[in-house]
Image (cartoon, rainbow, N blue to C red; front, side, top):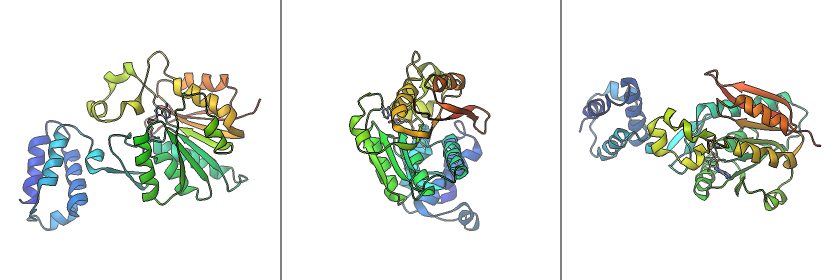
Length: 291
Ligand SMILES: C[S@@+](CC[C@H](N)C(=O)[O-])C[C@H]1O[C@@H](n2cnc3c(N)ncnc32)[C@H](O)[C@@H]1O
């Protein structure tokens, strides 16, 4: 089957669901990944024929069902690194790259800090935050925890793929008995988390392909307690961050003010709310003071 004919099939089947440019992007991501055929290669040789087109036709059926391209390919890019993904983990988002960037910029401003920075990522999912930090801070000791065994399996694979050492911990951060976790490590210089923060009532604002494919354990919190995870992590951080240690969160764009209030109530200082490139309140940081 000619690759160009398959591209036409993509448009015939998908034009009512996606924008034309997006369909071409999907098509070339698939041809590159499955057959090592780039956009340029096909332009130079429009008569390329595939002997076994079933892979790409299978992907077309999944795109018709609005399965995210990252899950179809089984991988994605985050902060310049490759990550394996499957439906046990959230697909890493560009706004989370902004959070990683913020952490790294803050670190480079504090040049007095020892090289042995210790970092904990809570709710690591694919491991994208922990692994990107470990890659950029080769002297840091990085820990990453998640309640999901299946997510941790993916994160472990990604740490190997990116050649970094992370200590992974299976733990429920809502369980106040953190004794084993704490004894396994010292206090942290940095705690970071992108916990579940979408209120159930916000489901109607979300795209169907997210709702139908991404793990709800990673996304949702009850409407009546949307800061549940942030409260638990603040509580944990008060006893597990060093004096002057920093706490970084990705947050729900509608809850920036509530987050500031929460961090004040927990007696953190230097609280700073930051917007993402779409000018939405998306991240917050604070510094620990021991009482
Ligand atoms: C929004 S996802 C973030 C994943 C990844 N850090 C990222 O930024 O793409 C939240 C993660 O928190 C984990 N999680 C949910 N409940 C948890 C709990 N009680 N304790 C620890 N982790 C939890 C989920 O499994 C999921 O991987």
